[in-house]
Image (cartoon, rainbow, N blue to C red; front, side):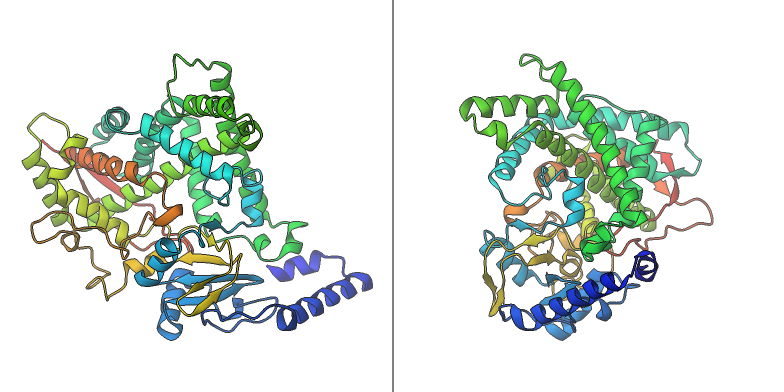
Length: 503
């Protein structure tokens, strides 16, 4: 790829001299000009290219970091071009960073690509720990609790699952694309929460959204050269242009919905999360007029985008992986259904109140999240000051990544980690065992997942309703492929299956 770009560059004598001067300057700076820190060890790093020559691009980075742990220890330093990155691969080290020294590591590492797609970091997910971020996060959490909690959560899930189950019954006995149906289920929950609307399975924009999620997951998850090689920003790759256009179109969709809500807003008739954001900003401005410039309408648009896209994508992938695992392990699917039949009376639907009575179903979800870690390296943190990690020194501005996949596959904490065994998450009394730092799909500390307390009951209820009504299996003569796709992400492969209605 780099060769093709170099051929396109006008390498005049002046350009060559400038490039040579830049290279010499960078090498000199990296060799002599930077303050020396006692960083965690890691693979060989060279000026300009960093550790790229030590990487095997056919092997996902989270697995390479896990292998490097055996040589260098639980914290390693790599360089992606000029970007310094510390990767953490054991529970004790992660606990020190996210919990004990959470304030030091609460920053968000900011890249050029993220700046482009977030209108200058105006969202929650990729924003640094600024006053605007703290205020937005608080407002968003309050809004989620109001519109996606308790009876409101049940209402949205029941409404969405009813539509999906009608469709599944129409297709009974036929192979279906499970990703499409689970996508509709989850998408309608968040479409309803954010904008009080819903899609049908053949809706053109719903299908466009699914395609957008699939494209961004498979391509965006592998990163951008523009973040590592600044000159490419002047002549971006086709991938960068394609994905930034997709994000811009998605943001236009969110912005149009938000502007419609703003035009029709009524304090006496707030229907959804978008209405709540408009209300919360107005109230905050009344209490402190300076908020008007700190939190703009564009911040609210990006907050809606965060809740909508992150909520849909992580939830749908977790449900898809769980169903695929249950198809591959029909004996476990039968155990879940037996628990559901024991707890739920005939003719009744599962509710949130039933959740504590169904620990095995909960354990299946937790084991699925352990075995199929949706975001193996999570989201990149950044140090907000010079700090330490054990006896090592971590400079301010260092990218820090948690290797969730390594935590979830550590044989010191999980016997036979490659095996799907929900019982491992239950205690001696058959109840769900307390959560440990070795099970960390939602991260921890100051930048933990905003929606964890909502996502867990939501997914449990979705799975319980689906398995109460259907048994999922592979078509005759076919098996489920559980090999993940992606190098920085953990994506389920397209799989057809049959949904049989339980009588």
